[in-house]
Length: 206
Image (tube, helix red, strand yellow):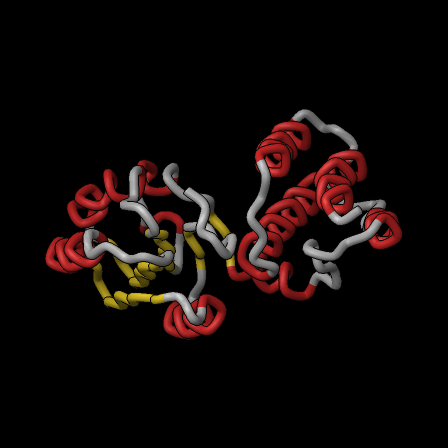
């Protein structure tokens, strides 16, 4: 489900949980943001999240859950909500490590790291207004990136598009991001993969 302003649910791996929660609240204004921050997220906290999730909203509401640790039983109780959230609801989970989260939870939402978040914000590129000249400049600047660096760029571009620039991605753009990781794993040329992603945004701005 896509939010009207383009910010989709995701998992953010960060050591600065409270700071990131406050930053997200600022980014998502004026939409309603309900924050749950705990040292250890337990079943009683999951029940509060579930109750909040089923309070209907006319506009998108974000539930942001941040914790240093998550119990397995609490995570399992949220799986159905994460997979099929109620109308106008997006979840954002913050954790210091991926290993805190069950594989079943990690599979429900895209995962970002603070590093990719900062990298996205430092990208001197606005995907809402990008033109062909900027595409070619970006490709030239990243002409010699490694496969892992290219993957980090793909992740940063996705974060930039959906969270920073708040775009609603069309199906082609979403498919291109999925395809990009597979192509890079198959050792496709990084520049070609990045060009595929960026050109879909430039074409939208003709």
